[in-house]
Length: 291
Image (tube, rainbow, N blue to C red):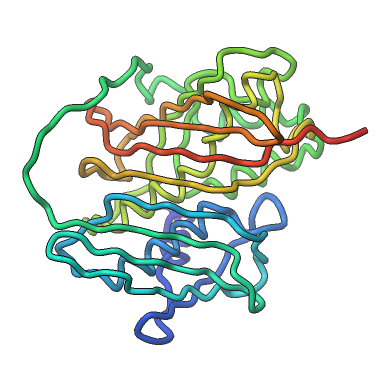
């Protein structure tokens, strides 16, 4: 296991303050705010630790309310909304400096048999044929407002092996194309068998690239290039089938709409053998800087 992955797992190992109250730390991010995927993953950890072990997460719905301060702890308060015969519902509020910064609702379910069908997995090249971030990111350093961003991105994402199938937004600035993006990802090391851990790792990664397709439609490179500013507004995920976050997962993303200073991304995450594991939808602020 890489040191970066060990640090991320330590970040997700929240301190229990009271029965339904947990405290989390933050890591230094590429930008001076808490990474949204971190808050979502920590909130799901907090919720999951109040749920019986035989119930796994099947959905989450969340809102990013305020920018998080990476220099301050985050307190997660869990509200035990419902414990039914098959489903368990939890609500989590993340607080910093006395104000809520994030709100999450999550539902957990006991395993049961049922009807089965899924959308087929789209074509994507084998992830082992694609360049790793260490090889790909330095190529774009001269396109960033600050060339050191490439190194900071590598450091921030070191816990995950994330590989773009096609050029990322910052690699095709000024060239609008189909609003669709694909990346392969997996944790940079072997994980324990705890299903909640794999769900939380996927939640963490899901916030990294989902709005890429919004940028691609307009030939924009993103915050690192300086031609848009943005932030996540809300994020929803549905976990359909078991998966491992330390094995290759295909993140197939597209944007059906952008308007009103907002962009919508939707995606499906498949295991390498073609099983649809997760569906994701996110809306974010996507604004063109003035003047």
